[in-house]
Image (cartoon, rainbow, N blue to C red; front, side, top):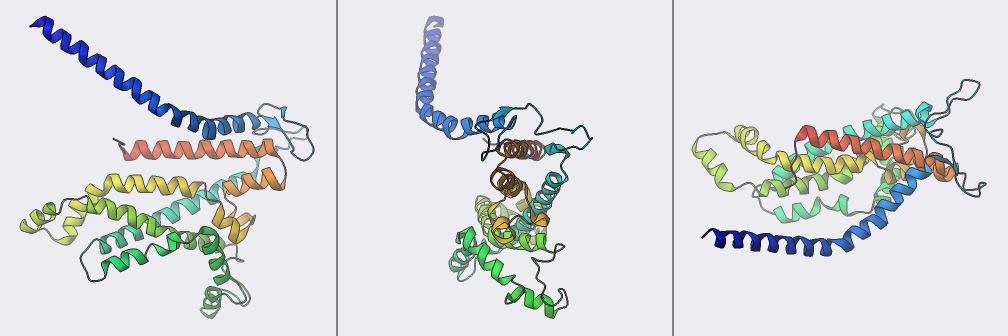
Length: 312
């Protein structure tokens, strides 16, 4: 009996080993592809961040150590990236944009998901129509909003001037105090459908018999929302928010199309592009990219640790 059970265990271990080997061989092409398209550029960028390399004048990168990150001239002037006010302004602008836009998108997306999850006539048409802003290419939607914000013929700036929010000839984008929030509005308009769609998928995974049991117990809709819906949506909300956080922290296209290199709306990614291509400082721009990578990684790790999301 003992010999028979030992033979079964050995056979089971052999089968598991063969399965693991097969899985590794099946994953190998994907792992090599990821290493080629993501691993090498990342390592190359980290290396360039420790070099001085002007792509217009230098024949190649020159190793300078940490000087791109921290360097004080003999006159006592700090010119390293971590000593540059423009960099920290870009970080602060990106954080404000991310926190406000993702927060608003989550609340509005949750409200829309709750509405379209209920039974009503024309629900399919409503579900389809709310996806239109998300389906429009970012370049197109950014230019549309740019025209709507125009100080001469834009309808939004015209309303702002009539309501006394703007001076004559002024637009929400030209005013440094409102420019960032104008961009947040564009991002919310475009990305709320994504949030609603993700949250709707979470809502539809909640068994309907749980709500029927809550109705039998006399629980109100408000109680069902706080005690049943929100706890069961916790994982969906956490995953959806982390997707949007990562996307918003590296935002580039929409703010750049609408405002270009304007200081009041310059995000971290726009600052990296400015250093790499406008100033041709590939080494310094690579240092900016490395810091963006580290900031996003730290925020993602902290968020996932505090929200206790499990990817089973």
